[in-house]
Structures are given as C-alpha cells and as structure tokens.
Image: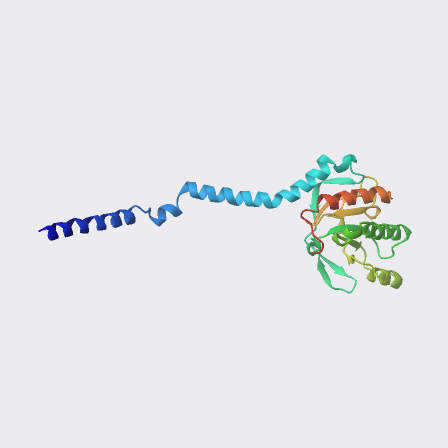
Length: 235
C-alpha cells in the first residue's frame, strides 16, 4: 500500500512543471511583430548612423564655427551649399575616360584652364604644387587636378612636367560641364581661381583670384586638421 501511494504522487509533479514551462513561452510570431521591439531596432539603427556621421559633422563644426586656435574667419570663400562632383566623364590626356566621381576620397586642389596654359595658368599650377608640398606629411591626402577646357594638346614640355609631378591629374572636360559645377566670384572668370573639393566630392571653398599663398596654406592646414579623424590618404 505504501508503495502504491508513493508512486502516484511522484508522477504528477514531474509532468506539470514541464507543461507549464513549454506553454509559458510566447509564440514566435508575437515576438517578431512586437511594435516596441521594432521601434527599438529602428532607434538602434539610427544611433549607429549618427555615430558614423559624427566625425564628419564635428570636423566641419570645428572648422567653420569654433575656429581652431582663434585664427578668425577663412581667407577663402566658403561655398554654401557645397556642390558635388558632376556625374560626367572627363578624359585623361592619353584618351582614357575618367568618371569625375571617381575622384572622391582625396582633398582636391582644382585649377581650370585651356591647354595653352599661359603665364597666369602656369602660376596657378605652380601654386597648386607648392600648396600640396607645404602640407608636409599630410600631402598624400591631397591631389592636384587641372581641368583642361578645350580640345587642344598641351605643349610637350608641360605634359612631361605634369607626368612627373606627384598627385597630379590632368583631365579634359568641356567648359560647359565645368561651369555647371564650379562658379567664379562676381567679376572673375572661371580660370581665375583655385577650387578646393573635400574627400566626399563636395566643392566647398574657392580661393581668391591671385591669392596670398601663406593665407591659402592656413585654410588648407585647418581643413586637413579638422578632417583628420575621418579622412585617410588614398581612395
């Protein structure tokens, strides 16, 4: 009797907790469709995107608002809104097509001119080269671009000099395509300026005509310093 009484109670307690444990789990479709869970997922995604964008936003805020080292306003003209690289193909001097948007990933110093490159053009190309070299160890973050706006061929001596200049891209692009992207200051020609394009492909600054090299270098120094947290050399 005692044996049969002890065996009956033992069977029931073992079965009930197992049944309660299984049936207390929420159905999978309810978990997947939980509105609160979906909202939390979206919030996490937005936070990740914000964290990724913060270095870029902070660098521009530092440069244009805080003004590092109290040096005052920029020497060059800030372009607002900035203008992205056009979705067109330029042509290298060897005839190779080069999509303009493939130039993203580097700071660009852009000079515009015709293939004859008279004295004023040569002066801008020289300034462009000197500015890059004055960046010291940061110069590999900067490329030089000469946009040639006619169909003629530059002189052999000039082509040879360009071919041996580090970080130099000579590209042929029709004047109309360049003018749709870059704008000179009032009263100036398209060829009169040096244009600064950031690594995201945005034209965001225009140097004055016949600029002071030391003041222009200061602008470029500050841009490179402000973007150091997110910009790396090379595309």
